Length: 135
Image 1 (cartoon, helix red, strand yellow):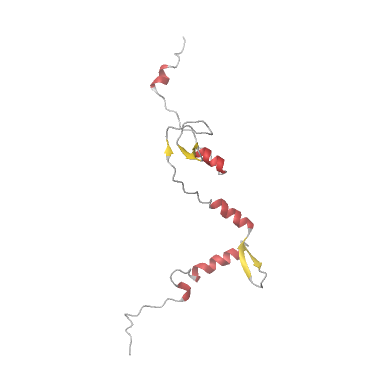
Image 2: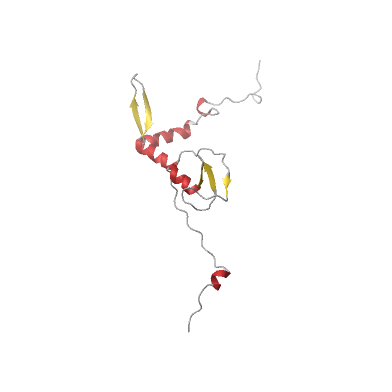
């Protein structure tokens, strides 16, 4: 019995199997981790071992990838005063209090960089209230 080579699906090697990481891409990454001393070998009690990232790498990863924000299905309120900063801003009802985003971040410990205040445009009423130069 002969098989038709055109209808036969090619068998991929184990290193490039679908869903797996190709060795050609993975090995250089592992070598880099070892070369830069970014991983350490920990011996297990049963004679085995495992590789773990160094503490410095763990801290750097934590800084690069913040923890996921919990999903909230809260409504946004435009006409409420923030219970913390007492400014009328966009707020969310959190644990019975209306809080703006800045105060939410401050209370949760993830303080964001301060946002610049918007520039105030010149309005007609500003021009009317200016004092004329005295001569």
